[in-house]
Image (cartoon, rainbow, N blue to C red; front, top):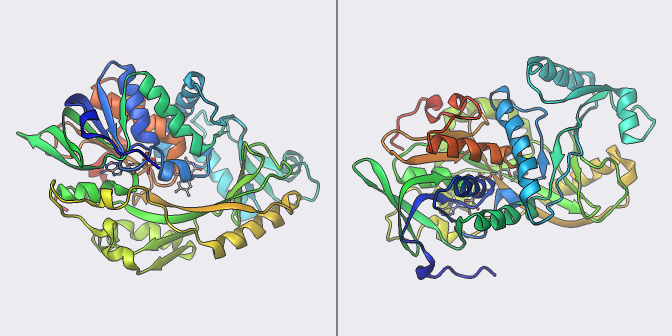
Length: 431
Ligand SMILES: Cc1cc2nc3c(=O)[nH]c(=O)nc-3n(C[C@H](O)[C@H](O)[C@H](O)COP(=O)(O)OP(=O)(O)OC[C@H]3O[C@@H](n4cnc5c(N)ncnc54)[C@H](O)[C@@H]3O)c2cc1C
């Protein structure tokens, strides 16, 4: 159980307040503290309680959108630096990722990605069927080939953010759990304070790293943010023989070898979307993604329509959606996961004996073009949004945080930040 934060433990004033204690918020606080700024992170539940602990644990460059690939390459370097400074083992290792191609068409997709991204230092290579067999230590030519990236890494998500939090605190950041932020105050168009459920904290700058809650938070301020939350289900197994030490992606089942000898298994793209009012507001933004992915998606109407994520208006004295849901923990889809586990066993007969040890759900925050926003909305000087990492933000999280800090402090950016602008969606600011 999380201890409630006492009102007295709130600082009166900091340089920067960070909303959200996921990988982005905590890394942002770490980098700010290392640069000598006073910083507080306010997390409504527990640090890393939502997406950042529920993900598959892949830290990959392979298969990324060209617009975020250089940022991911920088992020991969930042992960290595982070791990070198942590006091705790988070199961990090450059064990490689491998995307298997069961058909010529899948193999061709990998060829196209490699060709289109030849200018980047991603380290990915194509394996033919024989090389794929050798990697998987088998001899049946079950796969046409694979996209293999030996320098990609994996880590244990449940351990990572708590360990980085300990480092950030050591560097001077204040991290408050059970401390929801209700709103942001402005004076003459400039950020002047955040209002938390326990009181106000004056600050010059705010970073919103609210994951799947960022849209809800911003809409209350009249800022349109086309982000929707999609449910994804994951399982972990009992320990079993090693297939590879890293991660393997395939259409029917993807898996990662865990530090405990089991596997984290799920199916890429298999997502469920519970319709909220915002789905209508942003329908046309998302039309291209829906058109591409509709076979893999399940849409449903449910109580969520009237639930906390459906709200977008409150005042600073109200109990907000962030206090109503301390840790978003959706029910996993066990029917889907049972079939995904069977697929994994069919693809990798060596793990035929593993059993389900645990299953969970997570809400993925998705933008229409599936890359993050790292930008300041018009009319809100001092507010920076770092959100919308669209289902692959564990790997790129430190990079997003570093870029956010560089923008906030007007320092040289490690990559061109223009692909991450909010105005790329061409929307007016009033939600
Ligand atoms: C099932 C699943 C599998 C995934 N697999 C991978 C993978 O293998 N590799 C990869 O790179 N990425 C993966 N991802 C995506 C990755 O986990 C996310 O992109 C990343 O963790 C997002 O980090 P974040 O800090 O932006 O958000 P989060 O981790 O969601 O953190 C946001 C935090 O903000 C808090 N918050 C929100 N509003 C408020 C408020 N008003 N006041 C206080 N606190 C607030 C929330 O409680 C939450 O803790 C996966 C995601 C899921 C769900």
